[in-house]
Image (cartoon, rainbow, N blue to C red; front, side, top):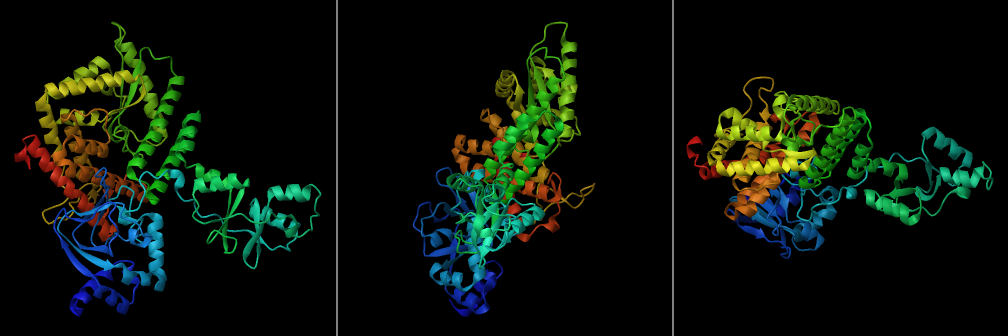
Length: 637
């Protein structure tokens, strides 16, 4: 490669870590050995289980998909400046994913033989790789791991899908309280009292040689075995059981059980011969497990007051934040958070029922909208309905009055635990959304026959319903009725499809983001209406058209559609990926700003984040073209 080309490659690589850490001389030398590859759209760079190449890759232009060949699921999309294919080279293993271009792409193939020495020469490069592999992200230095913005939770090709939350690393332990072997026990006890800790680490020459706990003081000093002025070495427990920092909940539990101890000493490399960085106690472990979904589920079930459920719901938000920080797969995150949300709603219903007479007839509580789809990660507006069994003549008004009162109590309870009322009053406490089964059937039939804009809007919201509590048979019967009616009202699907194409475009002619032009969110980007809603609407109408019941989650719907319609498999899998990516991005933005994450201030996003958002929009464009052709609506585009 001549110097001019090498200089261009070096200039590009120098914009991105870890290459930005190299000196100009070393960067130019590395660039001199780079091969520049052009690949057409949908060309493979490597396949799953292929032996690792002698190169890893950096995207110069275009985009590369990382997929699991078994399922076709997109695990990540690499854009400009992203590295892929490096971990197998460093680990000496085969590729765990397949890499294929999403569009015409230019790649830089960097020889591992030239790069490997830089890992030991430059501490920053080594740290980059360690952090990258530990966090399963390509770029651990990007804000909040933005390199995995459009990922389902996996940033590298070696990440393990479905990693249990118990395998997340524990937070760094508190600051150490220490003493020397010659420190008098009375001084150790005083230090523990002042610092409010249950243990003191005994250090000699800066290394851990023993530990003194409350239990040691009771059994060795209070019992009279040693005087209070005895040196620490006389009562300390030794040798110290050490583990490396970054311990997971499961590892800590096993360590304590195996050694029958209540404290673990954490050191730099996990051995007693390296400096101590903290002490982990059973209490610390219990606090960490307080963000475990099983613990939270039990806490919800034990709640006897609304404010107790609210406290647990706040812990669920912290659990979500932790999952996002550690890149837990988005599919798993949605399932866990949705189950916990459902548990909170059920407990609110149970508490409300305790304050009312027994229901006159069986009923079911239905969650609508994002919670009905299992996508309500943050505390957004309530959307719910109530369906009850047939009522004998003369008792209709009395029965509806009972359920409206019950629903009002439940909606109020949900408000108290953090879910705001729906501004459009699409809640079970509204008589229009609290009906017997036969009237729900009449209403659905009316929506399908009178296909005005209001009917399409109401049905689109309602068709994402999910059973939450009560007589499940009522919900099953309602579901079956809907699919029967859809088959006999094909024109309704066409109107529903037309509604799916009415959402405003996310970008303009030159691919710039289209912002709100007025109102309270002027100059913000509406992530919900411009990006997520079109995907949700399209998945719903296609699912109804293919008669796929029992799946409400948008990403899961696309994955099922990929099975039902192999000709459009690639598109549907891309849409599933985009949905999870956008939901993850919205959740992060909501947690960052303390709101729903719907409206985004673009100036606060990095260039990489903006680029990756636009990648998601490509799938949306192809999807809307498919909808227009499938339902003969070409004229509306």
